[in-house]
Length: 295
Image (cartoon, one colour):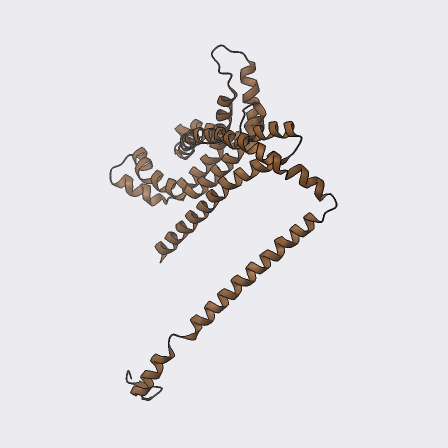
């Protein structure tokens, strides 16, 4: 059968014609279809955003809005003030992130401990997560930033930066603890059972078997939460911390122009969008690994 095609002998001329015909045409058709789809998507995107831009610039009050939000002179004056102020947001983010990772992991472990004896600890961790997820973060910042210094207790710090870090840590630890807990619950119970059968204690099984797998699985959701944390650092401006948003307010009031707010928005776009794309890449990679493991 290998020497025949459609029941007849396959001659040398047939072999030469098959070689000259090249690869199947389906691949070429697919390439042309993909190119055409990309071209259509690119053109429709230009038309869509071009239409939005045309509507905006032809609005009746566009010149006044342009002067209020897109003043080139105010932009040039604001950038040297606003960009360095973002370092305060970075400091807030870095300090709070370390504290959040530790506190949230402790809360998640407490909520995962079995047995009736440890019920008070599970209840305490549950109440903590419920309370700080229910109350808006700006209220927590207000209560800590103005309430505790108002007590005027000797030795209590009065720097608003300290209370900003504490407030962000308390609020985001409640959310991140739920992410950790979801990761712990995603580890199959057979993993812990196998560890216990090897002689590990329950704590050792949790530390060396369950937690490493859980943390690795929740890295993409954790990055999403920390993107939100980076943006929410602007909320601490309400208690007097001079960070990027507060600095843009100062520049706006000095120039009677809203352009500094756009400078602030651009800074966050430059920082946040690459982080969001990194999360997408990590999620796609984890999905490929999962699909490869199920085959």
